[in-house]
Amino acid sequence: MKEIILIKNGELALKGLNRSTFEDIMIKNIRRNMESLGKFTVRKAQSTIYIEPAEDGFDNTEAEKRIGKIFGIAGYAKACVAEKNMDDILEKTKTYLGEALAGAATFKVNAKRADKKFPYNSPEICTETGGYILEHFPHLTVDVHNPEISIDIEIRDFGAYIRSGQHRGAGGMPVGTGGRAAVLISGGIDSPVASWMMAKRGIELSAIHFASPPYTSQRAEMKVRELLKIVAGYSGRIHFALVPFTEIQQEINKHCKEDLSTILMRRFMMRISERIARKNKASALITGESVGQVASQTMAAIEVIQNTVTMPVLRPVIGMDKEEIIAIARKIGTFETSIEPFEDCCTVFTPKHPKTKPNIPEVVAEEEKLNIEELINTSIDATEYSWITP
Figure: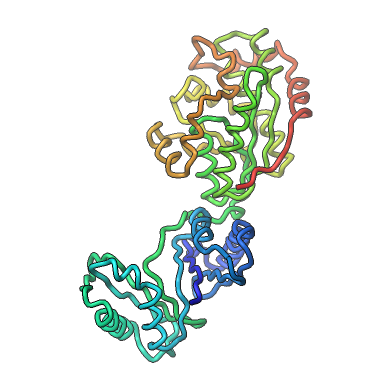
């Protein structure tokens, strides 16, 4: 029995004349995400994308799992292909869904006839199928409101398709339709969530992480790479920049006021990130900042930190509380990794009493004690680049 995967578009249906371009990008993402599973074909027709195995051994179950993480997809389901005649549809419905029907008590039949040449209309398909199922599974009863199993039959130009319900997709927009942005990724809970949220809006991600050996460990770096690998399961591969930050933090600690050290550190991070982002043709930065969560995320601190860059800074979790962010982290699978006890450089030289209402003149006065350009250039020159894949 031939089995395929049917994919329903989400927001793409609203894109009018640009819809085809968005669909093509999503199909490209599907191909890239599943290429390791074997040979398959992808085609689109009648607001549906069809994925069909082209060789034995193609893992439809794993394919379905991966499809669930691809942005732009509203719903998806495995389906059996039948000939466009009622005898074949009925027989394959019984065979394909037989195990599920045998274990259920109630069912319902839904039908959609996109091919108007088919001799049965939708209500007639439902009646024929329902009667056939009751004949072969006499323990079942019909429940049109809350059935245990839903039998869905679609008659389309290319064939007839039988499935049982569909899974909810990741939604959003296909990655690559919203431009490119660089996320400042730490080992915490917030920045991986922020990354996922912006990828869901179609933004292609690159990532920048600041490391301060020997104050931060190799295990802390591996933790960040693992977080990005999880995010890449949704966003596709991520260009990763590992930036050495020890010298900058030591210079700040040595020459500047302790209560402003975190603000100064963050300003250096923003400057470096903007330069790396522009080099990688990104047009915005992404952070996991949430107002009031820590001392460097007060409104005054955010203003002072952003003052160093000219490109937009996207803060998707800015208005969320911690529990809301944690709920998303659990949903996407990053939470357990984020809480592993390997700290990033943001915890190095943390002041006992950080200033929560800094102002630009006093911060600039402290920066005058440092050779800003030399420190930035040295750090960027020593940056290591790689790719993170799912």
